[in-house]
Length: 430
Image 1 (cartoon, rainbow, N blue to C red):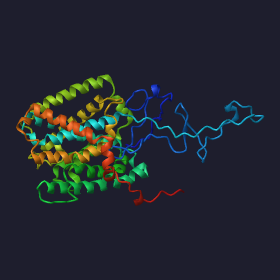
Image 2 (cartoon, one colour):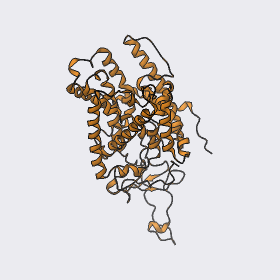
Image 3 (cartoon, rainbow, N blue to C red):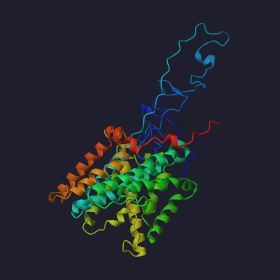
Image 4 (cartoon, rainbow, N blue to C red):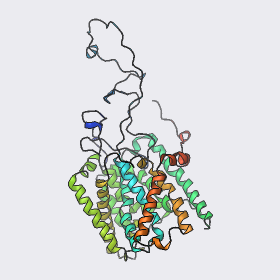
C-alpha cells in the first residue's frame, strides 16, 4: 500500500526533536511531513496549530477547553497544595494567537527552480535551430516536468483527507483552466491568428491543469494498490502502443504517470536520504553527465520523445525501439529529478518565498512569451548561439521572479485563486 501507515511525529520549533528550532526534510535532525499543498502554492501555512490549541513560548501545544481557554491542570502540577485553595487568583494572561509552525523551505526552493526552468524552456523555442539552445532545451525537458509531477504526487498523498483541498479541485483547476483557455484564445486572436476555443483540447501550457486534475482523481486507486509503481510503469510503457488523443491531456496523463505515482509513495525519509553528502556528489556528476549528453545529441536528436506523450508510431519507432526509448527517458528523468532534489538548498534562501506562488508564474508567463514570439523579439540573429541562449535564459529567469512576487498575486488572485465558498455545502457539525 502506498498510503502512510506510520506518520513521523510532528515537531515544532523549540521541541526536543527539532534542535535549533528547525525540522523537516530539509534537516536530518527531525522528521515531519512536507507541506500538503493543493497545487504549487498554498494560501495558508499548512503546518499551523490546530484550532483550540495555544502554544507556550517553547512551542508546546497546551490543551484547551471548548471555550478556547487553557484546560485546568492538577493543583499539584501548579505548585499548590491540594488540601486548601490558593490564596490569590493568578492574573489572567492576555489571549495570544496560536503560534504557527515554521514552513519548511525545501520544496518551495525546488518549485521556484523548476518554474524558472519552465519559463526558460518555453522562451528558447524560437531559437531551437541553434545547437546551443537545442542542447539546453533537451537538458531541461528531460527532467523539469517529470520533477514537477513527482512533487505534485508527493503533495497529493493526503489530498482526499481534507474537504477544503477537495473543494479546490474546482477552485484551482477547473475555473482557472477555463479562464486561461479563453484568455489565450483571445491573445491568439489579438496577434492575428484565427479565433479558436476548444475546451477539451488544452492550449499550450494549460495541459498540466487537466493532467494534474486526473492524476489526483486517480489517487485513491493508487493508494489501494500493493505495487503501484510497477503498475504505473507498465501502463506508461504500454500506452506507447496506442495513439492516445491529446483531448483532456490524456496523452500527458499516461506519459508522465510513473512520476506522479512515485511521488505519491515517497515519504519524508526518502528526502532525507537525498541530503547525504555522497548523494550530492553523485548528483553533481549526474547533472554534468546529462549536460554533456544533451550537447552531444542536440544536433541529431528529435525533440518529440522528450514531451512524454507521443506513441511509438508517431515517433516512427519500432515497438522494441520505442520501449527502449521510453525506459531510457524514464530512467534519465528519475535520475535527474533525484539529483535536483539533492542539490537544491534545504534552508531558507532569497527565493524560498517566491516558490510559494509558482502557480502564477506557470499560468501567466505564456502571455509575455507569446507576445515576444509574435513580435519577433526572440528571433533576432544574435540570439542563435551560446550568448543568445544565455541572454534568453537570463531574461526568462527574471520574468519568473517577477511573476512569483506577492504583488503579482495581489493583482491576479481574483482570477487564478477564486474563493468559491458559496459553491460548497458546509460539513455537518455532527
